[in-house]
Length: 493
Ligand SMILES: [Zn+2]
Ligand SMILES: [Zn+2]
Image 1 (cartoon, rainbow, N blue to C red):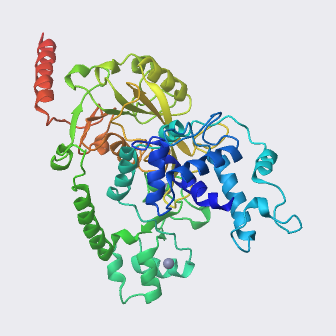
Image 2: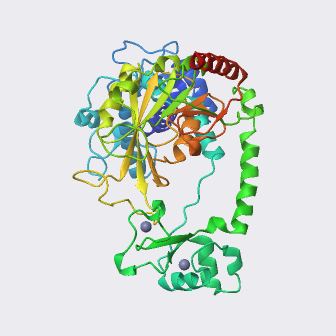
């Protein structure tokens, strides 16, 4: 019986390849593959062994087959049954001192299994319905392109080093004395502090309290921290962040890393569009305009749209808001035939956002969550947002249009971004990187309701809070100039 072990193991290990082309489950070809793996055996005894395995396992290859010959092909491979048999045969093999006896010859008084493999399978009482292995393997296996894309993304995008926060108070004290209220470089520390502290500043982040004449330490941290508008007179505590990335040594290291990454990024992979590697990313483009007024047909179509509308949340905000109806009535179909849209939503506007995406013809596929951190890398609990709980996160709805789009890269990023807050309503840059990984760096990308800080290469930004106009794509520029002429003429009339 143990003579079946190599063949059983072979079927387990090669089940995927022998079911696919060119073998396609044909016994004679499986025999060739088996012999190639150094198991020399005649075709007739091979067929005999296969038949015995099928019999013992009560159908791991065929459900009911009258006679098996070398012309046959396997119906399926039931791995579970084969694994059980392998386990059984291994035990038998290990317990066998001569390794020649078959199960049938085992002495009943020995401590060896006293039942046959057939009994063993009967006891296991496995359900008999065979899974359609080949089909299952095909369906669940990620395509080579998908696997390649994911591993390329991992190589191309630099992993940002995470620097721990130094909790050593004496470090903070010493550094505070040297830096006063900020604005110096770590490289200048050499010789001024002990090498322990110097090494620590290269590796870790230090938060140095900024003490001014107004500061009242007993009040604790300013709840606005890095977004505090009156830092010079605020009585709460603020911090200066001493970060290793300010160090020249680290900067140089990053430069060489960038060069290395550029090299990899320019390495052409067969099957990819060569232009992707040769073409430069378009310079940033923007139009200062009222998103509700400008004809979208000027802009052309985009692969991705990010929109951060100033939702009318019945609060006084330092900027104008947008009525739900106005947002819903935007002719978004003029901007996108297929692709993805990302819509920032807050509190009550989540529902409106969902409604908007659906009415524009998108399927809501995901929801990205931005967990907001303050300067000290703590989640924000200020008591200034939310009704029952403090709001420490923001939501970004992701909608897809055009069905199962083959040009989108899937499963590269996760749906959580943990990143610090900056100016009011400014969103984390990580989102742009996620988007670029999904649609590729050359896809046309649009940001609606953008601001100056949103302007970036490869992106088109429109909104009434960007300054001026800069259009690089000629077609868009001509259309925009025509539109401008027309509106100016109308104004004059
Ligand atoms: Zn330290
Ligand atoms: Zn403050």
